[in-house]
Length: 396
Image (cartoon, rainbow, N blue to C red):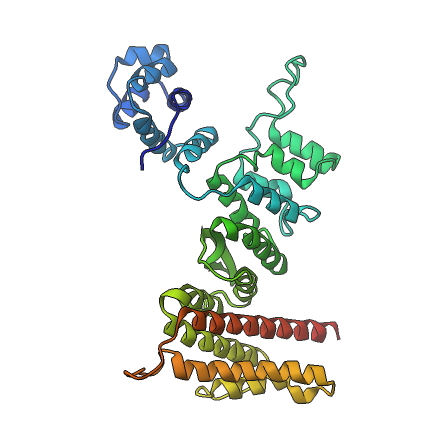
């Protein structure tokens, strides 16, 4: 797709690239320009003015070519301003993270520290070069201060020394509401890094962010583990129910490599492979039951069926209908048991675990949607109940 770049943007882009080239040593500039696909020139000219040398070679180059030159430079050097300029242009035409979404995220973060495991300034340094970014309050009348204050000194003054900035004020100073989508992704990924957040807070922030990212078509998804903790990246979100993000956060924190991956696979197949999604929905619950029973030091046979596993786990968690005398609790927990048994039956009837044959009913996407959503909700309930039992046990 052809990029839409205005003449003014083209002029500014040429200047930004020329400025980046002028950051190299004068004797390297001619060779660099040649390597970037620009015309050759007199080396004496580069010694007189590196910026002028680069500007002349960029003057006749199209905006699209300048973008490619900028990308080549960014592969060699860090230049935040150029990186942002290029990202803002190249992101056009693809789904944005809207200003409304960014403001909803900021509101959700308000009232809580940005991080729980490291210093907030250290978090921001991971995402923005705040130590070299200009202060928002440089006053040209105060020549002593001009050029010495940076955005980092602003942040320290207003969030550490005086604490008179809200989260919204801080994010405004960082241009969070207007920066590139790539920069937003870098910030959100750093915000949920396991080095930055405790496991509980990580799960809370992932659920919050995914709730607001989902309408724009994005979601934080587990891509690997770091010392057993999930590491997230922003990816295109699969279309699903509103509860998907909350379930994903709980299951990713519980077991990112097996349980959460099973859930992700089940969600992805709801429309494209309903039979496979139904089978995965049952397997997800089997995984959760076996995982919790193992953590609780309860024994079970490897080939034990899901209904038997659930009944054993219900006794361990004290959520079996017989554990209660109140009619309403017996009904609700009896319904949970019926859901689990029905998922097993649905899998046998409509899943892909057995040959369907010519006369078997063919599952539709709505059947898979029902099975996967029920399975995810039950899995989340079981995991949350087990975590609460563990917490109570530690408290006792």
